[in-house]
Length: 217
Ligand SMILES: *Cc1c(COP(=O)(O)O)cnc(C)c1O
Image (cartoon, rainbow, N blue to C red):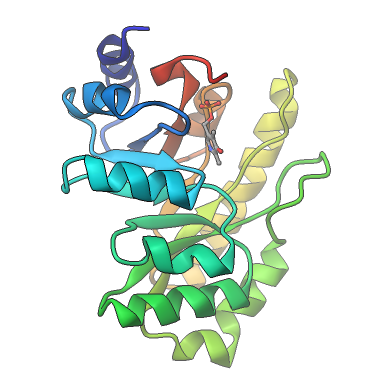
């Protein structure tokens, strides 16, 4: 795997206003450093412990994205440094992120994960549930957490029309939210297998793992 060449190709292919997040889960820090040199500054992990280990070993100008499901009791470990939490799916989790961010005297940016896949995925909420959170009095009291946008994962399928339909749905929810909530600016959708469709549908943040670093074991 020529990581540098892979990153270079991706950067050529995607518009400048789209953020490329290199998903480095399970990969050794040497691989992350290769991507870092290209240069890439946005890295994503799906386990808090692994992200924290890598954070300690790598340059401190890296922006760390937590893209996996977050357990509330682990928020404290990433609160001092995490750049963006992609998969927030409850008010309870936002409350804990707010609490831990406050302890660190900072504010943490989050995305709400919207369930768009047809398959029975465990995680994510509906657009209605997301609105309930954003409109709740409790949420409005949180001063150390900001919801900056939405994240979604399409069904894992070769059916491009299906994937397109799901991404278009998320984009329409995002456009609607952008009008109602001033801080919405990030739409995180698209992985190695479906990023081209995601770009067509208006994504401005791609989460790319295996196409940069090679297949995971
Ligand atoms: C692993 C992962 C990715 C990257 O997947 P690839 O198919 O390797 O590009 C993107 N988003 C999330 C939430 C992930 O867990």
